[in-house]
Amino acid sequence: MHATVADPIHRRRFLAAAAGGAALALLPAAGRAAARMRDDPRWIPSDALLAALPEWMRAFGVPGVAIAVVDQGELAWHRGFGVADVDSGAPVDADSVFECASLSKPVFAYLVLQLVDAGALALDRPLVDYHRPDFLADDDPQLARITVRDVLRHSSGLPGWRAHPDRDPLRTIAEPGQRVDYSGEAFFWLQRVVETVTGQALDQWAQQHLFGPAGMHGSTYTWNAHAARHSVTGVPAPGARPVVQTFRAQWPLLQPLAEASGKPLAAWTWDDAVRALPQAQAAAPAGMFVWPGDLLANAAASLRGPVQDYARFIAHIMRHPVRQDWEIGEATRQAMLTPQLAVRPGWLDKGLGWNLERIDADTRWFFHGGANAGRYKTFAVGDPWHGRGLVVMTSGGGGTGVYQRIVRAATGRDMLAFDL
Image (cartoon, rainbow, N blue to C red):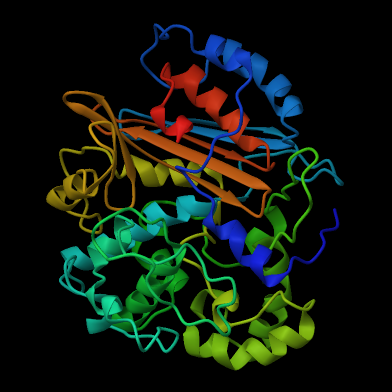
């Protein structure tokens, strides 16, 4: 499938979509799919749900779907549906690598909280104390007040993404710490902080401290041989204007540069990206690479992996009687799932990296969603008290309508998050 090259504004804009965005209009069948709670408290999809899934996929123009379930705090079930590539007809299988989109953010938040536990970062310390990138505005004193906590709960006061990062400095659009402003820019700045305090690139650090220990062996924030073989190709929603696939189109162009340099993409830091930018621009269509950030792993949006890897990750957000040395501590895990800032007071809140929905007086579910390039829609939800979780990844711009129906039918709950 061929994609047109997007102008820089559209190239950046796709990153801003995620959980909490406007939901697609729902068909009447959606309510019927979850008309009553299932007798089985587990979230493993029923035969009826699986029988209805192909029709939902056709209705929303989604060629590929992958679902994984956590039960009793462990990966319990996963399965792929449809095709990973429309042209080749290759099926979605256990190796299929989906763009996780903004599901990248909770994973990065976990990495950050590991560093908080280790004393390398402090939640309420300003980012400028660790690293002040040269793309910050010089005339904005509010930038010096943005803390690690502000980034993880989306109260940095920064915009989603700059339309022209090559020439526009980053500045606040609101007072830090006061309101929710969903910001990928804030996560990217914090990524630079992590690079500074660890001395390693994001993916390199993630592989060593999370992906390896958690068994997420098919996951990467960048690109490698496995991703090249198994990455799913997304398609736009029916009738939507095609835009460049961005990450899916960018990484193969960067791979030869990495091989020539002798340094894998997973190990590229900001300085590597600065050096490689002229070569990348010469090898790519105009507008694809406009600043060094386009060449790097992106903590806010570039994670990719098989659906069961992400389920293995959310299994570590659940309560466990004994936590392994590499995991965040129990107090930190609880802080991650504690309301930090209200979105809809009494019902929806921001945690640290996760969104939180109140189920009853004693229970909150954590959730997040994502959307990349108008072609990939993803959603993850967990009930930490009961050790249940559900992850859905789709390869179509119409995937929101599909994952909402799956979540309703599997959990028995019509989440308030779907109406934001």
